[in-house]
Length: 439
Image (cartoon, rainbow, N blue to C red; front, top):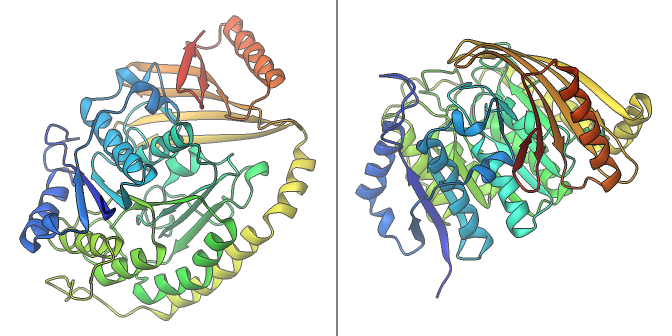
């Protein structure tokens, strides 16, 4: 049987909505499917369509920890969206197709490791779930995620911030001008993983010229140096010039040419809210490029909103190439310096807001270091006004490479916190197995 160029997975989630008329709705996929059927692409010999399946709770729990538990927060639509990504992963990892594109919703890249509800239209992080599934099921180690959404993927960054084997690259509209207000170059990873988290905040109005300069002169070189075993495209399309939620100037051709250059093994749909004017054309261009088919004739119906790129956007791109390049290519030296400075533990505090539900959360995070392994990290989380009321939890996260001694230390710390009586929940997450214990 001849291997197909591209596997497609569709899941429009007819039964899932945040609210009536919300921009993240099923039409985001339906107009694209209509376009593909009109062009006859679903019958093209290069393309194979797959049906999604349900992800398991263990699949979810390798990446996300729900408080009080993830099954109390999810719906079947979330399980199917994540499951669609796992089907795409299976198709590529088993060699059935060369690449795959999961066009699924709800999206995921704003969902952090700790989940209290919906943030930025996201509840669970479907890309992170897929990454951990690829590791557990197929043994992949070094994985790169390139996030092309206009919003900084703060959830994906959060989940892999301590993982030197995951390269996360996000280009997005500058967080000073757009939700979630993060994603600056100095957010480069915790000490052991310093330089594997690359943020590229672009000025509003950046177009195809700036984007491709950034890719050609920086991102491509970082990917070549990192040598990932597999590349994931977190394929947000709200950098398009017609998107109602942002202010960028990327075209369908710009996206298609980027997909052609990136050659991601798996793409997962994220944002993009110009439902009629952009998504059918951007998705078609990406699909054609990923399937090694001609995408040169893909053009949006209305280009009246397209503007030339301001010279200040070019200057920012030049600045980012220099700054982010220095961070990445000097990462080993800086990582050693940071580890020597922080000793056996690294601390940070975070304050988060769940825009869809009005939840305010504070986190105290501690990463433990060991000369023998990747050890473990802990997250103390306190959240106000969740759907379950005010709640708090202490979460111990066991890395895949944890040694027996650090595993004992991790459980000892969990039991100390349990006996303190401070926390409503004390949870231990085993990232390798997806098992979460409630002590």
